[in-house]
Length: 191
Image (cartoon, rainbow, N blue to C red; front, side, top):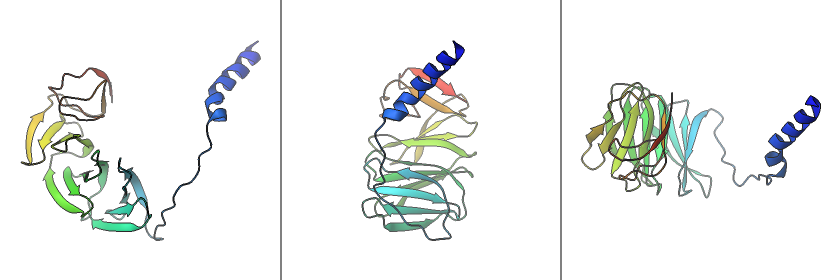
């Protein structure tokens, strides 16, 4: 009987995999032999692929052609997170040294740069591109106004995980961050 239950359980677990559509490769991006990518981010608009590289450089590829469009030297800073704005026109980067940088795309112009005391755990840009939520490691999450480059809010509790919510905030911030006064329902705090 246990064997029959095991077969049924395995079949149920594998069913989604067995009936899934086949994946196919759409584009290949070639890398120079000495480039090692630590992690990537893809713009929601599908225009750019950002590669955070081991040599402390950010490389931006044009997603449609697969060609390298920009290489930005990050002055030896180890990045810990990267996030595009909803329209793909801004790229936010957070580093282990607490530095936050916002780049305008496609020109790759540095729009804003500031530092917080600890390594950046997560960050996100509001859908209207006016606010940035930053979660430094073991610190309260901070909300920054991108036009004035000033902090406008800070959560009191230390933040060391991912905050998920059930609906977008009043400020339009997408998951994983939320403003303290958003009125959203918090479902889980993963530490």
